[in-house]
Image 1 (cartoon, helix red, strand yellow):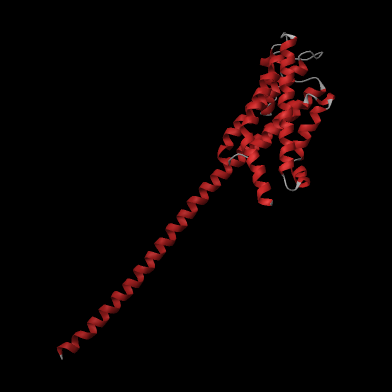
Image 2 (cartoon, rainbow, N blue to C red):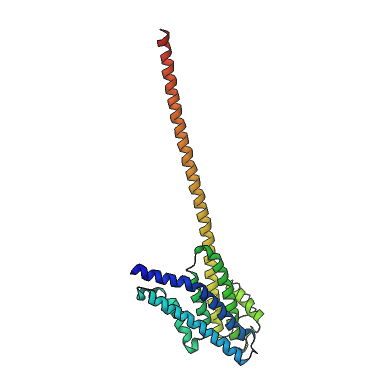
Length: 253
C-alpha cells in the first residue's frame, strides 16, 4: 500500500512537471504585458489577469493533488510548508503582488525533483527568471512612486542585475517599502544561487580529485603487487640456482 501511494505521487509529479513549467512561462507573459505596455486596453488587462489566476489555480490544484496522493499528509505539509505558503498568501488581497515571488518558489520546488545532471540548466533558468520577474515587479511598484528613479524597463533590468550580483552601484534604488522588500529578496536569491554554483563547482572538483586519487591508489596497488611477484620470482630463481650449483659436484663424483 505504501509503495503504491508513493508511486502514484511520483508519477503525478513526473507527468505534471513540464506542463507546470509551460504554465509558469505563460504566467510570466501575462504578468509582463500590462507592465511593459501600461497603455494596453482594459480587455487585454482582463485576459492577463484571468491567465494569471488560472495558472495560479493550476499550481494550487497540483499542491492539493500531491497532498491527497501522499500517504503521510501531515509529514507532507511539514516538509512542503513553503509550497503551502506560496499557494495561500497571494490569495489574500493585500498580498497579491506576492504571487510573483510565490510562482518562482513553486517552480523552484518542482525543479528540484529533476535530475542533478540538469542542475546547470535550472540554475540558469532561475537566474533569468529572477532577473525578469524582479525587473517587472520593481517597475510596477516604483514607476509611479513619488521620487522614484526606476521609470523604464531598462532601468529595472539594470537595477535587478546589480542587485542580484550584490554590486549595488546606487544609481537606481527602490524608494517604496515593497520595492525594498523585492530588493532584499533579489539579494538573498543572488547569494543563494551563487552559493549553489560555487558548491557544485567545488563538488565537481572534489569528485574529480577523488576519482584521480582512487585511480592512483589502484595503480600503486597494482605496481606493489607486481613488485611482490617479481621479488618472489627472484627468490625462486635464486633457490633454483642454488640447487643447481649444489647438484654439479655430485654428478662429477
